[in-house]
Length: 428
Image 1 (tube, helix red, strand yellow):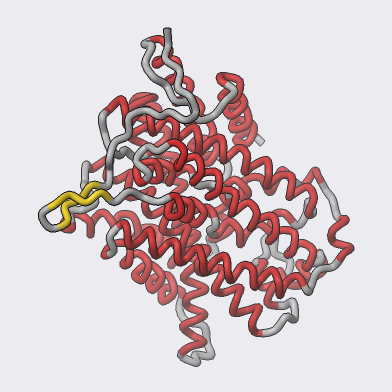
Image 2 (image 1 turned 30 degrees about the vertical axis):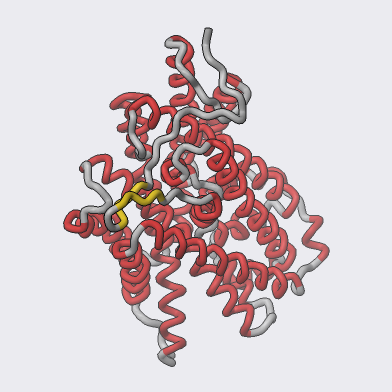
């Protein structure tokens, strides 16, 4: 008879944060707060800055419904990846394993090849978007501090952004980066609350009534990008050492915080911006920058400062998560350990320099990168592959009567629904 685990039980955990401290071993487990901040920081990135641009045609109510639906899908996906990661670590006897290593163990070489292509494309595309937008904001701030009247060359912002934040990740220990990221998330939340207060004074009640459900479909891809955090789930599982209760808490709370922020941001901005303002600001372009509309809202200099602070640190927190995700991929491919200083420079160069170069050559790529990432890569990595891995793993463990620890109820029906939704997103 197959053993069944109760909610309060869990499989044997592996210590992954045992390090030498002088002459003794020191156990340094990750915290729920740190892991929650890692997920929230990864989620609250450049996607939130693009949301109002794609949700304006549909209106507040339809886009609110869409955001909640996408969040539920992302939550289930994240818990499925956590389940597969836990079971793979236990069966392989490994204290940590990257997402693509998990895919290969469960779906073989072909599955790993498909996942690797989607993973590489998504991470590099989003890092291009983050470095481009983050570099532009940083370049503008540098120009203001130096009293430069003309805008600085694009390469100044992108290069400075990459060297500062990429350099901190290269030189800093994982525990330090976790604490730094937690502080950055706190800055994001505080500046976000200030933005809501200032932008809330510009709300137009007539905008609350606009509804166009047929226009919602075109916004789903950017919503999926905005809600994506699945790449960081194996890192969270490793940091929390397989503690199921803490992992569930971190994924639920860490994804719920961005959802609340997205809903509030979307509602306030859409209620503050009329279609006429969008047309006059965008100059006839198909995509407009919502930050320009906020700056044109007449709320004063403080609004512009808060917009810049919020945007920059929202991008940085997401940048950290996606750099870690790409590092995990290359460490699995080249069998490089994170602690080997001599091997870290080429590894970080491979992660950071290609998107920095492309962002410098094409500074207007921000919205394009987000749009192209939202369909194929997110659908494959966030929907189809987690469902297939879970399906196969549960079936194998059922046949072998080994212990299985599901994190999501619903059985095969839930997994089939995940695959169907992913296919619909890809074919729309």
